[in-house]
Length: 293
Image (cartoon, rainbow, N blue to C red):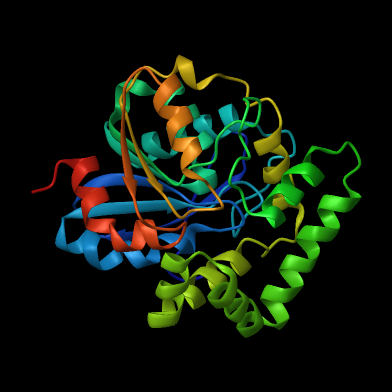
């Protein structure tokens, strides 16, 4: 049973796909791909601006996250199939795609699987493949450690890291918020100090990722560091890229990488961090994505 305000569809393999909607129910449809260790709730901050811009934000939980059933053998291509089914069941002939952080490879997979439905696509502070030189340049050390742990054949180390993250979110959320306020780059730190509700909302969305346990989050980290099953060079639709110069979770080098390998892309660099970029530039990002004036 899922919570009030959460919708669900049954996929062709009988799994439940859960999602929520923000903004204008009759607006232009935007599929929102949440970040890693996040959930459908991470799009909630876009509700007000989406209403103002007549956009319908559709934010699904990925497999094993929130209320969505797990997919033990999933890859990024599988998620593209799920999104195509979602579009079909919601009668969405055309959609816009918006991905934050770990949502990037999911967006790219959709861009390859059903490009004819996509009217626009934007990646904000997106994860990138790890098989190119300099893929971790400028990255925060704890994230480097998680990447390394996720790549190990033995799951115990990555499971221990993710379990500690879950326990801290569950038992000591204020401690985690305080850590963010102290250790994030200046732009993110200023955001968390001046508008702490953003931090608390992020932590709530992250905790929701663990509703079914740690397995879905561990699985996703392993997907990031393995062969994605495609190359970004294969994507043929235009992609807008937004990256923060202060970001140490998805450093700007990732934006340079994508801009160099994607066939058609526009790169926007701002003096922002991982969290502040999409929050401080939400109207500009959505306007550029959906041609809203």
